[in-house]
Length: 183
Image (tube, rainbow, N blue to C red; front, side, top):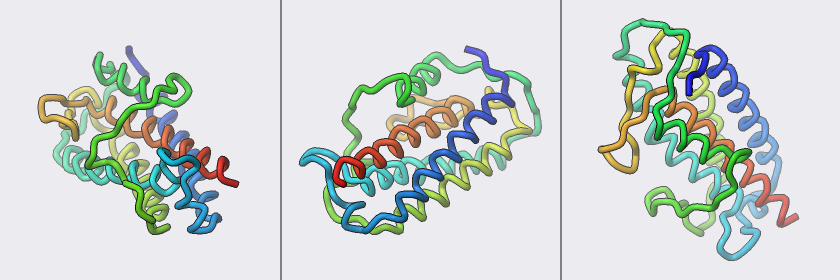
């Protein structure tokens, strides 16, 4: 799949702003509600956001490092990799609703979580937005970043942006849904 680079970045930026808006609404809730699970095997709203934070904490520094090293080379089109394209679409909540297990290191667990998790999320989203802006002068096809799952898998930067933003959207909506189910 081929994307116009500018349109892709604009779409992703719009989703980042949606994610931030939803989480700002979550900040108005009590710590008790934010930590309450809607069902015994479900995550609380804070657990959903902490899960996102763990992935962002892995990927955002790697993106910064690659952007710092990248030569300026703006390209009008981004050609998604086969795996990256499919994986990003799998994560998009409007395209798939399949539940999956997470890796133990990315599982926030069941303990009470601190509401500062929401501030961390908003900081990460601002960082991701800045990285999208910085990437306007680089070729999203050439920069590759290793997966958090296995060193054998690499994402093109354009695919990784789609994966992160769609993953974040999926779990931000899950957090809002979890909260709505307990009230």
